[in-house]
Length: 296
Image (cartoon, rainbow, N blue to C red):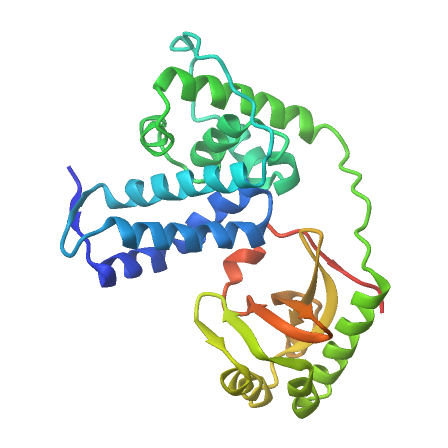
């Protein structure tokens, strides 16, 4: 039995290596790479609260995924999403081959497609076909019986095949004119490296999160963040959307293409920037993101 002693340092190290995998699960459960990162952070908080000094944890990776699974469920309930409940029938006779075709389909499926699955189906398909867990490991994470897990997997795969046969025609998101004006000014000043003017736009009590790196609060601390950007030249900003949410897209002009390497979310209050989330150092958030540029 895989049992490990976990203290804060060991847990944070384990989370560091598992974070992309955890995020992939949480993002597909929530239907958003942004919400997925929120759930990952909630998972870390709950895991830290659960351990006590040198507490022993059986199968720590599955334990952490179980916390992430429960955090995702809590997140979905908070958003008051309708959850389909499946009666637990005897599905033990359903065969479960490796289903490589289903695995390829699930890996390529968009977050939007996963959100059309019932929660139990979504979880089973992600854990088995996307992340490669066994049926027994999936039962351990979700807390469901083997019969229920097989049923959810069977029905989720069938639904994804139906969705894959349909053309996804999603209308392009639109940005409010005032929001676009504010964001364009922020981007133009940033690209022009006029960071004194950028600092003039931020609130005194501004909050900054550089995802997967650090948090800062207050104008004095956050001013250093802009200085870090001023010292390097491997970035250029554009307006766009990430999973339908207005965002500032970070590109590398030296790469010679429009590939997005990260993004920022900027919130405003009373005409000032009140909160920044910078995903420059969280490239795993880009893997499943629906990214769109706003035409200049």
